Length: 163
Image (cartoon, rainbow, N blue to C red; front, top):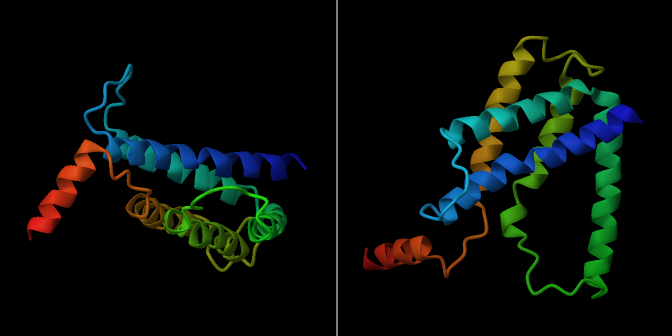
């Protein structure tokens, strides 16, 4: 139970680096009380470490967590279909990276050396998770919700329309 809860919390913590990078892209000139130096590198490392921690909980834990998430998604889908959730837009395009992210974590855990099939040997799994983390981080950032009223975005849209 503890590893199940830890894995769920670590996956939720993995959203922080993505959120920081997306906010930095949306509001690059915003006044901040604290500026994180080298935020891109720190966020990439933080996301990588979160994925490692989830992977290290093992196949048995991540498979159960995946089942719980699928059940939760089912409840959400039924509630949205029945009109119980009052939201104009669900932002599904911006969440398209979640499917590959969660299925990739579960798949690597199944193939890995922490309770899995041992097809990804110990040591190589660090590299595989690193490449996977960078790919998912890139996917999440390019599919973020873009605020059209942000000055930076308005300038980008004007430059694109001039081409």
